[in-house]
Amino acid sequence: MPELPEVETVVRGLAQRVAGDVIQSVWLGEKPQTFKSPPPVIAATLEGARIRSVRRMGKHIVFDLEHNSRGAAHWIVHLGMTGRMLVSPPEAGLEKHTHAIARLASGRELRFVDPRRFGRLSVVQDFTTVGVEPLEISFEQFAPLFRKRNTPIKSALLNQKLLRGVGNIYADESLFRAAIRPRRRAASLSRTELRRLYNAVRQVLRKAIAAGGSSISDYVDVEGAPGSFHFQHHVYGRAGEPCLRCRALIKRIVVAGRGTHYCPKCQK
DNA sequence: ACTATGTCCTGCGAGC
DNA sequence: TGCTCGCAGGACATAG
Image (tube, rainbow, N blue to C red; front, top):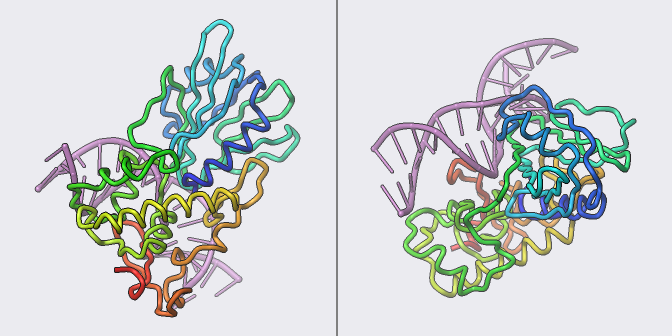
């Protein structure tokens, strides 16, 4: 599922391939929940716009648009669980569950495909979010996020209003590397543990970006290629298998309604 | 102001 | 083989 490293990979691919291109026309599908802005507004905002830049904010893809007659705007794409943003030649066969197509002046197409339909498209004048980028903050900014929070640390890591971009896989992998149990109350973490967690989150995210993300669900980059970080997972999806550090069996529990994987011996 | 839980949605694999 | 059923989860609504 697309979390920060997967979205970062997609954004880098998009920035390379479609920055500077112009959206000539747009087709939008019939599934209303895909669109957070009214489809006519999305179409009118995209058509004729030049893509100035593509960047990532948390798990959001932000297309910065410049329109001769309408001024600046932003096209926001959230991939949800199974969303894919593909750069395709027009002759490529249409995948099932294609919900939006933007035809570019260069002849290629930007296609949004999303079987499970948790993904969302919108256009806004200003895009702001709460929460901070884990790869852009210091430890002194990180530690206070968890102070006074009585929720499990795993839930806190998933809370996009605190840190943005960490999802289920990287929460579990970070907690393993920090040797902290997912159900520990956030406020109970010592400064030493928070320091370990800060380092672990950043290391896991950086390594995952370097590997092009994890391809667990149907995540692929803009050209349809999978990432490879799932080969470096220590706990996620390894329930019942031996811990790579101590050989104890990895456990699976449910925290915040999410499958949660940890080593009962290494994580305290 | 927090925190917990239910809901959305389709594909896939287990089980019979 | 072919069917049913349960599970996967990001964000948001709602309730406590």
